[in-house]
Amino acid sequence: MTEGPKKYIKVDGRLMVNPEYKIFMNNKRKEEDEGYEMVTAVPIPVAEPAPEPESESENEEDQKPATVSNSDLEHTVNGKISSARGKYATVAGGNNNHANGEMATIGGGGGNTAAGKATVGGGRMNKAKKPRATVSGGVRNVAGGTESTVGGGQGNTAANPGSTVAGGVDNNANGNVSVVGGGKTNTAMSRLTTVCGGIRNEALGEFSTIIGGRDNNTGGQFAVVLGGDQNEASGNFSVAAGRRAEATHHRACVFNCDMSSNDVARSSENGEFRVHATKFTICIDGVDATIDKRSIRAFAKSIKKGHELQERLDHQEQQIKKMQRQIERLLEK
Image 1 (cartoon, rainbow, N blue to C red):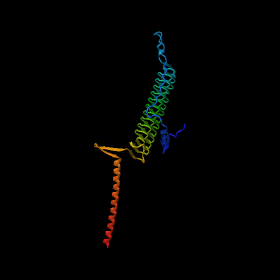
Image 2: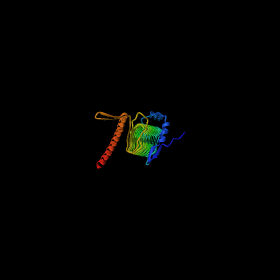
Image 3: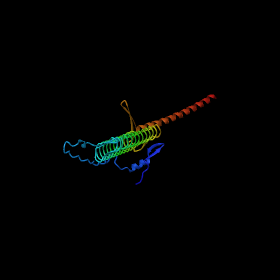
Image 4: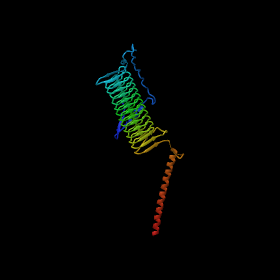
């Protein structure tokens, strides 16, 4: 299988998606933009109930969860093929769950693992790897950072301290205190980045935000993509929205609302506010003022006529000055 170009490159010290990679993926992508195939959970075997006691005098302690206590170890296990290996560790139920550290807790489900002081509420094949990490449920989710959280979904990872993935499918919160709200295949790469939802969005610059949409990325610090499709905000404090809007300069704001073409709307200098649209309307006190292609052409024509008129006036002024000089010479004689 042919390897594609590198996904990320650095330009002027900023992490950006490689344009060659974007072209490569657009040519390669065949999957539907909507829907996904969920992994069907395998039914979890449940331990058979204990036989009824032959008499009421049978010790009631036999019906309680197994508890081991001594000066070094106190833990509770209530599930099939499960283990709680740490002081105050608990597995409340389920199958093949393992609480592997002090005060680790697993509520139920199957194939889950919790490290010391971490919690897995349930679900299947989830892992809470660091202290105070939490996976509430879902399938194959990983809370890999201290105090990281995965709320649910499937195949999600909160990799660094304080990072959060609320849900969705195959999302990654890789930066410190980064957040992915949901959606599919979204990435919050750097610290304090946020992707609220959508599909295949990537917040790369620190403190940057993507509200939603598809195939958007923020490479600049404090950059924002408001939504839409294939937008890029790679300048610091830049903003992009619509479709194929690229704010590549610092403090640039680009909106591409043009339905008549598939062209890219791209900033050309720092601090630019750029809008591509088929029509621009301003309403003042209930009165619409519309700017479209026809009015722009008429305005450009008026400006051209104004320039021509100014040139004629300048020429006439030069002629008048010439005549004045001639009159002055005649008067001197």
